[in-house]
Length: 379
Ligand SMILES: [Zn+2]
Image 1 (cartoon, rainbow, N blue to C red):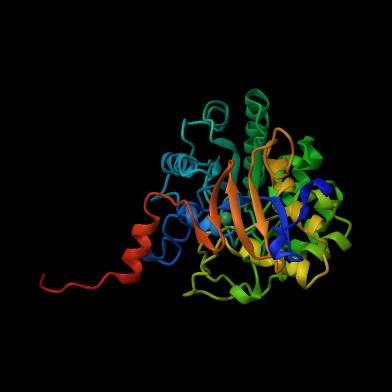
Image 2: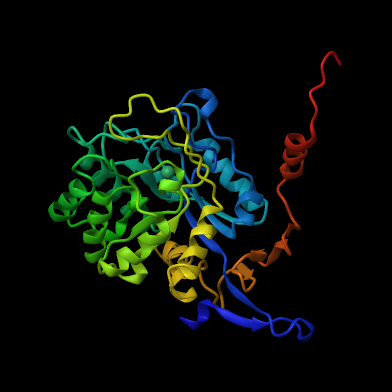
């Protein structure tokens, strides 16, 4: 595991301070076009800017549509993915939307999306329930998931991609992951074809996730699913890693993502009219990762796998998530407090000593407009 981390002394005049070189983070679940929309049109979150990812140490992002595939579509998602690449980081996306069975695609089929569109590497995020988030399945939801997973699996084999499926699970009632255990038992679809998202959302989901991991499946911790962010029944993401490991989930089967730039309404049992949008910043990935190391005693090497090599593995990104000959030069330099000092993406510095050195086309404009623009009344 030593290849993941390289503790190097800084220049002699700064000795004995040590810095840490590690792979850039791979965030496998980001609503790059902006999630939200569940609290009216004004609750549609804005598009993510490249610098937001870079400041969070994320050099590879996997984007997806979310709840709102009415006003946002796959063409925009693929375009946004290309934009990140043009800005110098690495970006991919998956096909589909959370609450639609069948899911929307770019080319009309899951298979052709994955086979022919370079950026599209898998399927999701899809709710198991045909009724959507917050409701157990009333019928054919799990069957549709099985069909979509096979589409991804077969197209992935054709195109040399992962073709994995990102699952959303109704976490508040009784079923949680159980319909997909049944799919596994009845069909023989490899468990590694699925990535259940934000398993720390409820105790019931954590319990099913431990069973899932013990069958060698991947499980994903949501860095923003925390009582601190209105998910009152969630397990703190800083604690979730240890609980999964103690439950027997293998270290190479745990990923963590931000579900970043999403903004779901606060949804609790019995709450009929949520008014709070739980905006989920991508920078939480690094924030929780630091807590694993500082507060929970996880070694830096062990803590790195869920945000680097493990998400790269399930997504089939062989050049990502580790420092290796032939890999892409996506690197972070962390100071001794584990704060991000430098971000290098595809060999080019983007962030150094706390400041952006390369930004997207509109980053500065947006910052200036939001920060200094004055209302001009009457010209
Ligand atoms: Zn999501």
